Length: 532
Image 1 (cartoon, rainbow, N blue to C red):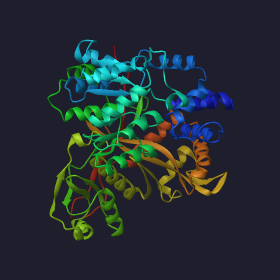
Image 2 (spheres, one colour):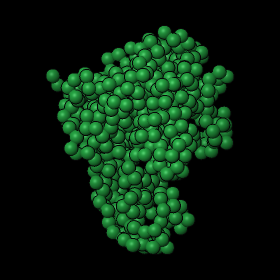
Image 3 (tube, rainbow, N blue to C red):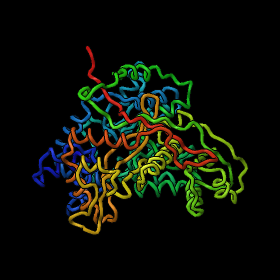
Image 4 (cartoon, rainbow, N blue to C red):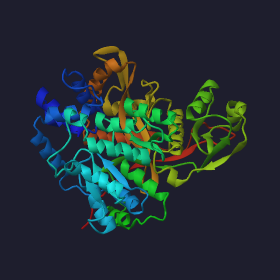
């Protein structure tokens, strides 16, 4: 919704073509919208805690219009697997209360399917705030409390002023519940003062969050500062608290259910079968036989094992610092089992010997740990990127769960085919000549159809620049890539998939220890026209 609001304001105020910013999932489009918001005298900076409410009110100043927008957004929506998984947890009494800032009916629908009745879930909204206290005191589980209202209610909280004043009864009940139970936060950024104030008040007295405070967080950017401060306060008070990185709510909930094998997941299985609408596509043959959709994913055959050592070193930062300080030629990750990685045995002993190695063995990658962005999957991604960069003499820029690679020497003849597709593949930004640019490719690993895939995204990378010049570089990247339609993108995906493809790709090409060895298919995943 935030990106939609930015787009509508940009189009209306700049008199821009809606098509120019139609796809808000594109990084270049988001950069344009953020630059527009940053220049505004009336809107908060991009990413500010009050961003959602201020943008909503600026886009739809009238309360009735905001209600109509919400109604339009949720009309026809169906519960996802995440909602059904949460309903399964409620039925199994692993969770009793859901506090939500959402207006929709999706959890109620999921509970109706899971409990096979509409009477199981007790719901309280702003129109009946006292009901929440009665439900909780009488332990009429499960309970859903809609802190910002129900879409059918006449009372909805959206704007900055509305969000500043949480219903007093709800606030008291939320604080009391946080002092009695643990709390898992999912799909909530912590943007409004009212809810965050209640979560903070629960720590004012000893004993808050007796079963922990866990904040699920998606994306590469860190949580809001206020969220970080809350978790730090909780940890200082002796509460088990922290950020839990996730890909998305649905996958996180499914992963959680895998740890609870006795839960009834009949509805989840049924939903999965209902939504399955694909079958294996035949391989394309000939120049004109490519299917309707060509995807930017190529199949990867990964290593089965890696080195595992157990020693007295601390967490992930300490491991990375130790490798950097020793200039170690290793790719490593810190897990509960120990330090996992690839490289020569002598190098592992040289870097970690001073920390008292008590175990020097081998770890096996398990599929269930590769379904989400785990330390193991991150280790494989970094090792694969190292193998590609070593093979093709490329620079690497790491950004969260993906890496961007670019030719170290763009003028080399090896990159002639890329120049044939896009023209120049390096240069300087016209509006800022001290910033260089190069054609590159983003690589990340993802899991689908029970296997790992390497996702390929043609990118522009910049050498130099800062936050102050971000708008300039974003505009340049957009101008350079905005006309790369299907034919051009097809050529680029074909080119880069051919570049990264290969058999026996090695991160280090070492003679001892455990090297990371990959086979990458050159043919991207694809769809095929369905036959009636």
